[in-house]
Length: 320
Image (tube, rainbow, N blue to C red; front, side):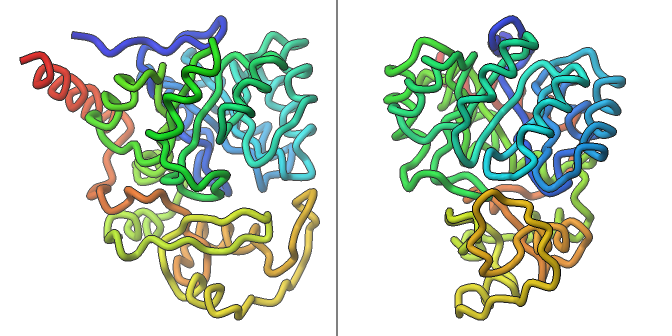
């Protein structure tokens, strides 16, 4: 019994699993290439990177995989166009765009023959994306890590969006196991996007302290925090999130004007970079609501095989 393939436009992955594009510098070339080589869709995260660094990471991954490779870039970043065009120039198969809606990205992708996959949080936006030429949409529920565009659970949103569009719908938020994948596919999804589970893998560019924070997390450690992006964010509680909850915002030491629209309460790029560099108390450790179900740090190969085995076991149990 084989998992169904995930086909997005002219690209097809052997497994219906897309790895989330986690910024800053968590989903880089090594993780994306490893996922693509195991039959999934690997994404390099561009938000927070300069075009030159992003090009190096995408090129590194493209040179090491013939699988389906894409990028994830937040519409909210000022360098959105530069990053997307850089990725297209390096031969990616698809572009995932979240944290905002861009009409321009559909034209850029269409001209280059690249699949465009926006992240959506409602049936209305999903229909709009399809009308503009999306090859698929990612429906990201409230359970997701990082910036949240909805307050509704993924499994509540999913059937509405599947009904609203004729393109593939990829379910994101709270997906950690093969059993979770089965539930999403049974509800009409063509595939799933998994971020939190892939952040705690050997090939992830997160430091060991970051990955251990995931492994040690309990449900009570997951909090909703503020972000200068203008959206709430889900993270693991630490000294920084306690400060933010108290309204004690760290001063901005150096503004690089990374966002199109920033509340300037604190510098989110600085805090995400701190976490990626190993300071998991004063940095921002984004994670999904199901992080407490992450108990180890496997290789991508080991994880992908585990997910397939779990999905198969759940499928066989349902067939009995």
